[in-house]
Image (cartoon, rainbow, N blue to C red; front, top):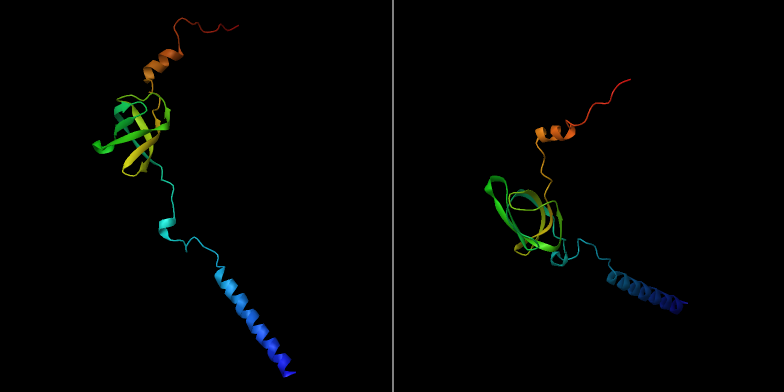
Length: 134
């Protein structure tokens, strides 16, 4: 009987050793365990507001912003252009960094506001008569 007991005990130890070796090899990877070099972040979208100093459609735009800060952007082929972009126009440029370059992904130029005097003149036309009351 001691022989049987000894064989069962050895089989039990062998099984425990085998299972613990397999479990030790199957550690789940956690994001914290991944090396920092392997993490890839999408480029952060940034914006810059100012007045257009120079513009070449589809190529580049130079914008002069607050405190005379001037930035030049390459215009992406798929950049979204909203409004009329021309020299002297106020714009908002959404861009991302690509190495040492800044690439404009969106350029917005709001429609110029009409002066109040012009708005009032358009709303009331002198040729029209007020409706008659009965």
